[in-house]
Each structure stands twice: as structure tokens, then as C-alpha cells.
Length: 97
Ligand SMILES: C[C@H](O)[C@H](O)[C@H]1CNC2=NC(N)=NC(=O)C2=N1
Image (tube, rainbow, N blue to C red; front, side):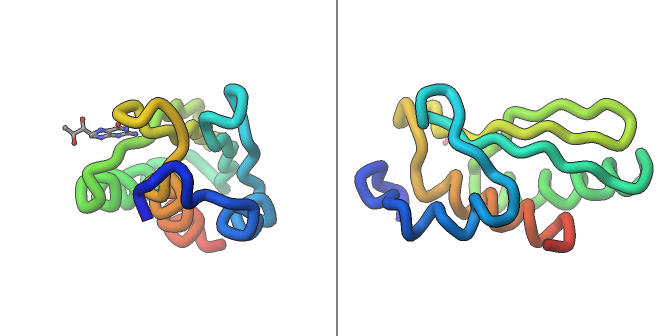
């Protein structure tokens, strides 16, 4: 599921349910994760770093204390692909959704 054309509403709907939003003219998925404290936020980032390496697909993200802001897009494709959906799911799992 790496073709941009395969991303339909049914694929994205479960992610909207966990707080992901379309951004950047629908070329990206954004979500803000809020954790109990910095330690939990950083543990999440450490787990997701492993997932990103496994997928060879990497988030744009920033961390301030217990907040992690994420943007997912596929630079190679110039928009959203199945890789972004896969990484979003892994992030939700790592955050305990
Ligand atoms: C060469 C390598 O496959 C590419 O640079 C990968 C790595 N990680 C990536 N991550 C994201 N988010 N988009 C990409 O296009 C991308 N490309």
C-alpha cells in the first residue's frame, strides 16, 4: 500500500478517529500527541524511531516537554502514501491507542 491513488476515505477514516487530521492541502497527516511527562514523550519517540527505521519512512516532528507534534508525508511522492498510514498506525500503537 504505497501508491498515492490507493488512499481512500475508508483507509484514512480510522486515523481520523484517533486524532489525525489532513493538512497541507491534504498532502500530509498531522497529529499532536500529549503525554504524562517528558519521559513518556521521549519513550514514544524512541519507539517510533525504531518503527521509522524498519519502514524506512520518517516523521517530521517536534517535541516540547510532554507534547510531540507530528507531520507525516512522503517527500519522494510529493504527498500522502500508504507508508504514512502505516507509520501513523504504528505511532498510535506506540502511544497506546
Ligand atoms: C532513500 C530513502 O528511501 C528515502 O529518502 C526515504 C526515507 N524516509 C522518508 N520519509 C518520508 N517521510 N518521506 C520520504 O520520502 C522518505 N524517503
